[in-house]
Length: 229
Image 1 (cartoon, one colour):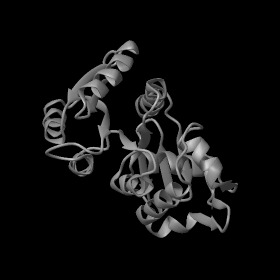
Image 2 (tube, rainbow, N blue to C red; image 1 turned 180 degrees about the horizontal axis):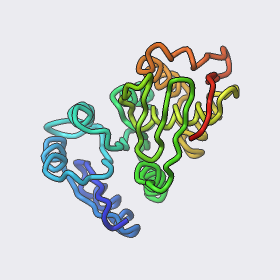
Image 3 (cartoon, helix red, strand yellow; image 1 turned 120 degrees about the vertical axis):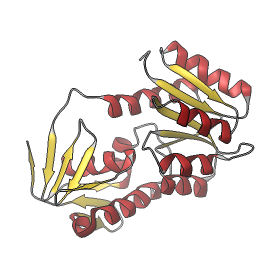
């Protein structure tokens, strides 16, 4: 993990130190920024940042502005730190492309565990399995999706959600089950998070959006002819 860089952005120096200390114990390299403007400067100066941990409320440029700026150029995973009970903020963040939320106060061990999970998924290059569902093709190793031969740009969570749907083709999936598997068992967010991501995923799948069926009062089911290469 020593070659993986994580950018920690928070205007509270004690919070940055707490997060940094736990990440360094797992041999991550840690870069720090005290506000949004500094975070953007560091991000564009260092092209090897593997993940960003980002506070919402900061001087000069807040977390939302940082996400918007970064997402114009990169799909780097972003974990956002937010106050408890800010459900609308979480939904807003997912719309912008945030991958995970952690509410303050939080357990540093849980934060590092989520970092580990995301980086294992985004940096796991040993599995070259390709999934096909109708005219959708997913290269899990390259983190690439094509529909009718055209590349579709998905966020990290949209990609994970599509993979989970395809791997469970024809199976009715409750929102709780999707949360547990795609957002991990320790995610305590609102199930409407899934609806937000499904809406965005459908819009990106275009004519193949109807592969994702809504099961009213329960969740979703993906239906398409599926095979593995």
